[in-house]
Length: 135
Image (cartoon, helix red, strand yellow):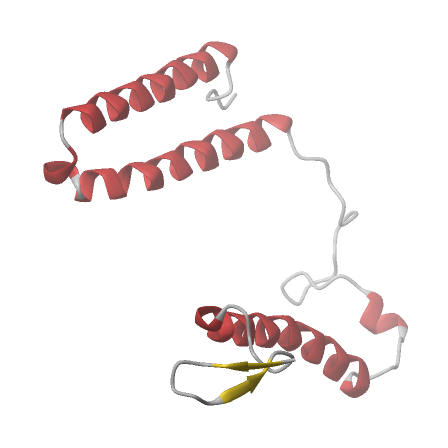
């Protein structure tokens, strides 16, 4: 099928990209997908294949390892990290609001107060449940 554009040039439908603004994004997406695949293939082709006993040992600052490499961490560490990540991401959401505060008006201010109130309630809940205690 052949189309004619405003300048009178005929374009084949099969060659015409439907979303012309996204061609750079598509190129970036293809490169982003190809780089890890290329890295893995290169590693597979160039990596040494000898699996001697020395290569299988755990490296611990040049010393002989003491005990096993797998240890069990306390669940409180994960809870503390999870609470940190949640509140860190929420702070990132507040930054654009703070930058454009003078242009947003009263409704945006009230919405931000509701958002911060929800965060404070969540913080109080985590505190009450003991997620912030390190004992």
